[in-house]
Length: 351
Length: 274
Image (cartoon, rainbow over the protein chains, first blue to last red):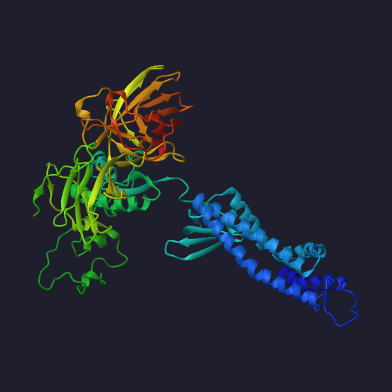
């Protein structure tokens, strides 16, 4: 609603201002802000103004692009972007003023109109203004710069540009993402490539039967042998807890931010290969069933496969048909007792 | 199965010991060269120079062909340019070295330390001097020196820092960097690691073929002030009348204040990382 009111107000205010300044015509003429647009002199001015726009805008655009590239090469892409934008906007304002002067318009009423229009536009474009202000803060505070990799919410990507209204990202699957500056200011932003080195954390579970000290030694050897792993800060192996099925270790190694992903992938492959070589077990989830203190352990009976007793799924005992052990409604112990197969039953004692 | 071949001597540049210097590449056959733990192969074919490198084996001889044909890298060169020049240069990043045994330097005490650094080989096109390639003779691990926010990426060199010069120090692929350490702080200095900023060092060679770096003085003035480093730009007295082989990669800064010593406590905070 506010936006609609603003849009309607713009032509109304503009017409009022222009009409108030226009004198009563004595001869056929088209006079705007005291300038007769049909006079030969005005036509000449108009042609010059059009030429100014046609030549000036590409020149300003080209100059800002050149300045951006030049400063980026000399300093950083972020500074290049800021310098390029400043030149473009400043040049555009100068061009606009020059064009109006060429047409013979006085800027004073325009500035007055701009004040009134500003109020109307302000109401109509609160979001845009908020984004512009946020953009200024982003450029001043520099939580990230062009070419940084950032994470905003679930989106991770490389910063292409920090513009007046939004930040543009390129995600790693090559999507273009535009995030309004206001969102960036309001939400948590993680700059992944801010610092020169990054840590790789890998969680590794080993069987309870394994010797943790030996496994730690093996993991450190693997980490040290990886060419992407920095000697210092030195790799570490920490025991982070006792899981349901495994002793959980965390391997910590450092790499430069450029080599981080390579180290992470490489370490996982190397750890798996080395564990296979050393016979270190990475356990799958274990479940232990028992029926309480007062019951005896489950009796497990091995039934050899014979002709007619294949143990295949069409064997009725697989389905726990009524009357057979394993029927619904029986206790779990009974179901297990009646189980006709000899599938592995993993048990372990919790430490 | 390729037959082993000995490294041929350099054909010119008497300043440099073999196999450094200029080599002609025969159009008919591959030229193998061994530089310490590095094996190099050169080939000239259709106005192209082919170069391959790999870690050398245990023996002195180098196989006549690289172990993997995909290791070849090709350069199109002006017709007839079939000479290459092997030039020793320092690595492109600082090197963190650890003394044989960490030692403590009392306040207002000085110590002279000799650190050996593995060189890189710069391969230039012989008649133009254009650099084709730079290869580390021995691959060094990467390490980080300094804080998590403002440190610098360095090479880690497990070489020992010795207190005296002996013949064992010198090999054709190693350069000796003399460091005059001076502790001007109010406490003792526990020297456990030293960051050598080799990009500022020149390389000199003696008549007997030993490589030396500039005479460097490091003056430690405490944790707050760090160290001031002076590079003389001249060979040390121990090198006699050594001649300049290569200039520094970066301009010599006669004195600059920088972090040079690392003590283990600087990294002790990592222990809490989980």
